[in-house]
Image (tube, rainbow, N blue to C red; front, top):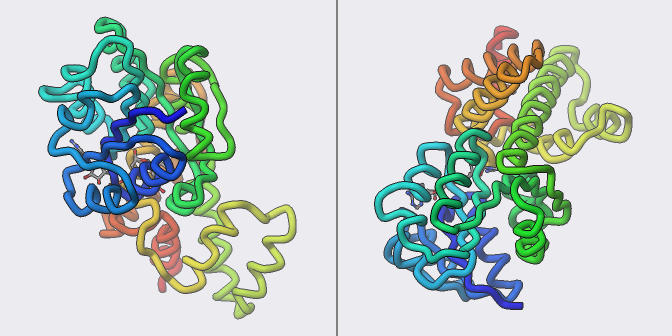
Length: 292
Ligand code: NAD
């Protein structure tokens, strides 16, 4: 069935996701701080709004896809935000990657107004968003998940309810740990292979077919071969996520020794000015360490 959806946050991920909901037959009203992003959604058959209040006023479902905790707090809990402007019974789905605690806090504040929430962060990158093949990890009530499932199915191919409020964010934190470590070691292998004088494209081809093969290798191979680091997923955002997983792991007594080192390397990349680049630019840090 067609639903009335407000979509707030039309960046690298939110824009193609909103467009995919339009393509699936939903009535989508988009809002972003960037008018150009709103225009893209309108051109795809969606609708534009002048404010969050304007976007959410008749919405049955509100989806948010903004950078980090402060943006989620401002957009959902803040003055002129989502909770001030939706009716009881509305389903608010935050798909940003933030701390589990903030998702729990948002859920509590919403429940006091009779508003339901899900935390539903995603993995799969810009390509996954465009192709509607995201992995979506969802925290919240089972009944709300069941209601949202058709919308998630328009955005992704692996959609799993993983637990109560915040659980989606905990799983996403683990995802970011795994991805960062994988990119870092792929970058180390690239510098090693180049220094050794082996043909890099050939080497990555054969590595991709063995146990070293991975989605990270397949997706980031071209970036590394061509030193093409337009984002994609910005190092600034991965730095945020390494902070989330480090804190969340400490809170439950889990040791992340390799993750801690990679978190430092991500911080170093940022300190060297690589924050706006795609996370495949961790390669630049390995080059610096190898004296290139
Ligand atoms: P982005 O910076 O491209 O997009 C964020 C958008 O939010 C921007 O367009 C910005 O204008 C908008 N925004 C910020 N504050 C706002 C407000 N108050 N009102 C309306 N709009 C506002 O970031 P992105 O890459 O799309 O990432 C969004 C989230 O998804 C982040 O939490 C990120 O960690 C996560 N994520 C990103 C990727 C990726 O590959 N890019 C993959 C998975 C998850």
